[in-house]
Amino acid sequence: MEETFDQMRQKDKDDFRRAANRLMSCCFIVRKNEKTKSDYYFILSKRKIFEKYLSVLGCSLEINEEYGVIQLVNRENYNHLHLKMMESIILLILRILYDEKKRELSLTDVVVNIGEIQEKFLSLKIRDKQIDKTVLNNSLRLLRRFNLIELLDKNSMEEDARVLIYDSILMAVRVDDIKKAASLAAKYKKGGKESADETSETGPAD
Image 1 (tube, rainbow, N blue to C red):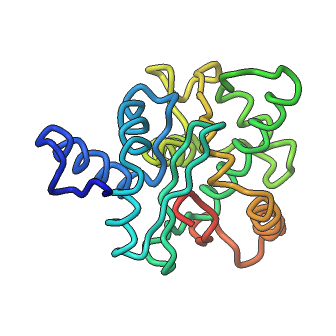
Image 2 (cartoon, rainbow, N blue to C red; image 1 turned 30 degrees about the horizontal axis):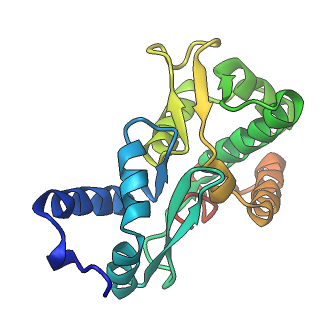
């Protein structure tokens, strides 16, 4: 007989509530993130109970044990995060840098710095100047909230400030998402009516 929520010990019930709330607010639970590592293993151990209760909300879990990532997927297309255009572009840049670092160095942990993000932005020729620091800072903090990255240095906007990119970015930005984001970036590059405030659905909550 499968265990139910009511049959769990009180500590497990408390852990269930904490992990479920974190999953709902962050979308991604990452094994490499020390703040969510215990939640990752707890969700794995209680997977069937989580799936049962989440299904009531029209949600399901996508678990990739190779990446060490658990993603909450909303099957009803509710609560998607609508990113601003520049947020989508920054997310795309991080995914590109992640792939490049993995391919070149076969790293376990992928770390880039702010200078590399700005350099990649300029190389895409979207604009002839760097990303505004406030826009970049706000965008990175948003992505950090969803467990896609971690900011490793206090002065996070210095050129050599490091950004750890979690494997969750592979699930947040799939191949089709890259093509879609690249298309949006091309529109933004052309100028016209597109602006940094225009939104897209490319992002971690899709």
